[in-house]
Each structure stands twice: as C-alpha cells, then as structure tokens.
Length: 467
Image 1 (cartoon, rainbow, N blue to C red):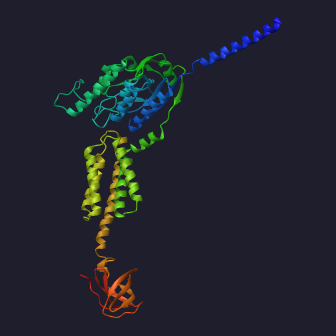
Image 2: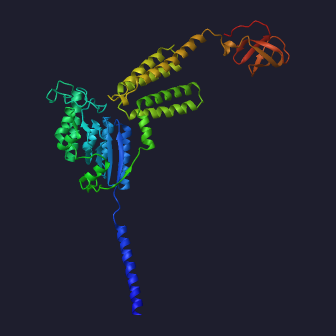
Image 3: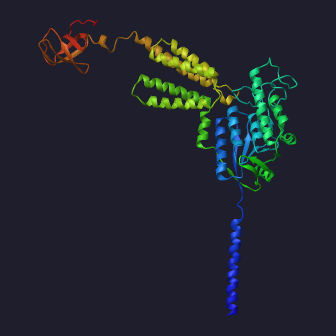
C-alpha cells in the first residue's frame, strides 16, 4: 500500500513540475517588434502622410521602435515640418537610418535626422546642405551657390558671416528661421548644434564617419540588423517619457505605402493637378452649353475639386494662381459672350503664363512641365480657333431655323373653314389664315408669320420676310 501511494505522489509531483515549466515558458517575453518603412526621393505631401500613418501604426501595434530608412535629396519645407511634428509627437521611439551605402540625407533630410530619437547612417552616406533657397519653395538638394556639398557660403560673406542688413532680407529671414529650427532640434536631442548651423548657413556636408565624430549622429551601422543591435540599450525621451530600447534581435515588420498615400503621390504631381483642373473647367463649360447632360458637369466638378486639392498640397505662387484663374474666367466668358477670340486667346495666354509660374519651388519634381503647358495651350488654342472659324463661316450660311427662316417653307392643310384653319408645319400643328379656300391635305406655302399664326398661300405664291 505504501508503494502504491508513493507512486501516486511521484506522478502528481511530475505533473506539477511540468505545469510549472509550461507556465514559466508562457511567461517568457516574446521578441520585440520593430516597424520599418522606406522613405526615398523628394520629401513631399505623400511622404508626410506616410510618416504620420507609420507613427500611428507603430503606436497601435505596440512596436518597440519605428525605423525609417531614409534616402532623400531634400523636399518641401511644409512636408518636412509635418514629418518632424509626427516624430516629435510619437510615443514610439523613431530611429532614422540613412541607408543603403550611397544614400544621403540632404537638406530636409538633415532636419529629419536631427529630429529623430536615434540618428544612424550607413558607411558611404552623407548629410547636410540644408540651406533654404526660398521661403515657400522648400529645401533643395544643393545650395544655390557653390554646387552640391560646397562649403561656399550660401548667404553672406566669404567667411560665412551673415550678410549686412542691406542684403536680401527675405532670404536672410528664411536662413535665420531655419537655423533656429535646426538648433532647437539639436538641443532637444543633444546633438551638435554648431555644425547644424553651418549646414544651414554655409550648406556644409559631412560623411557618416565624420558625422559620428562630431556628434551629429548617434551611430554608424551598415544594415538593418546592425542598427537594431547598436541601438539596443539606449535611453530616449518620447512623449510617453523615457524609454530604454530593446531592439537587439527584434522581429522587423515592413509597412508599405497604402492606397491613399499612393493616390496622394499621384495627385501631388503638379502636371496631374493642372490637367485635372482643365478637365474640370471644360466639363463645366460643356454642361452650361448643353444643360441637362449631367455627365460633363459631374465629371468636371469632381476633377476640379481633385485638382484644387492637389494644388493645396503644393507650394503655389499666388501670382501664378491669379493668372490661371483670370485666364479661365476669360475663356469661360468667351463661351457666353463671343468676342471673336479676343477673350479666349487672352485667357489662353494668361492661363499658360500662370501655369508656368504656378509652383514656387526649385525641385523639378514639383514644377509644371513645359511640355504639359505647351500641350494644354495647343489644345485650347485649337479649340478656340475652331470656335472662331465656325462663327465666321456661319455668317455666310443661310438661316436654318428661326422666325426669319419660316417664309417660303411648305406646310400641309389639316382643316380649313372660312379663311382660317390649321396646318402641319415642321412636324407641329399651327393656326393659319389665308385668302383662299383650301382642302384638307392640300400643300400650301408660308408667306408670313404673325406671333403664333401663319399666313399661308397656294404653293408657288411669292413670300416676304416678316418684319
């Protein structure tokens, strides 16, 4: 009996040990997850939307960090600031890694790198050249003077000191604002603010190794795994407080641009925006010419709204926009008060010039193509030439409808009594009068029109034009 109970006790003890082991295994921490996105090319509205979505996804998934693989020549100032606001407002640490080798974080990319919680670069990459070329346009990939990567002052004397007050005041304001902005980011992240100022004032650039030595970045890592291993254990400050990164061996999840981001990238193309606006205007004009068609008006309104939304995402010149609106107004006026092309051609010229001046930036990706402007101008010019030619040729053609064209036309008697009756004229039943007695079905000719009554005579009688 004793052996029986001893055996039972041994089995229960084994079961308890197994359950404890399983419970301990279930309590072992799961590997951390890091969300990864790629940001390549010129920084624009689509990039800002993608970054905001990535931050939201990282926070909702409880990711240990958001890693941005960056390669950009720069971009629009407003989009850059939107991206930085997303980073600064993130409760998930954001690691920006300039990669792969040969990539760069020029101009707007330098600001984004300074704003990140952990700034990393791959060997063979560079950053800098952060001088703003114009207030509304954005941050170019190269300084205006001296070429890309040049250490020549972008605004000031040869030693890099600021220009005197008599210089370009607007440009100096933009430079000073950019310096204050990047220095505030450097102070927030504990990075080299002196070099950041040089990057703006002198368009200075640095390779990855020198950037690490000068305290511009936090680490140099060749690839994704190396970045995660090097960032492990670092303590960063987020909106949720201090966090210690546990990224070594973390599982990476890639986030691809969604349909909205891709659509925004297409709409942010100024050529697409301009074409959409033109389709919208022509659709509305066609709807006015053919009331009740509905289709042209609906398509035109949708395209016009999409075009205006797209332009709202871009740095536009108010002078260019005003010229375009004025040109469109002249072209619409030509349709309702024909001036034999004066309004139409003037509107075409204003629209083409306004389109050329519309986008206020130094980036070719965000400027309207001259070929698109030429194609639009040629199409619109051909359209108005056809309208003018039609108007001119119509003056030499005989009248095809209207009261003046009715005398001399044939009609058929429906009923007649006492010098009056009804006739069938152009498919309609008309009241008629005449000095001759007619029989139903007899062919007559219209000789005069008085209000809604026809004066008819036997076929072959002379007619006169009504007064």
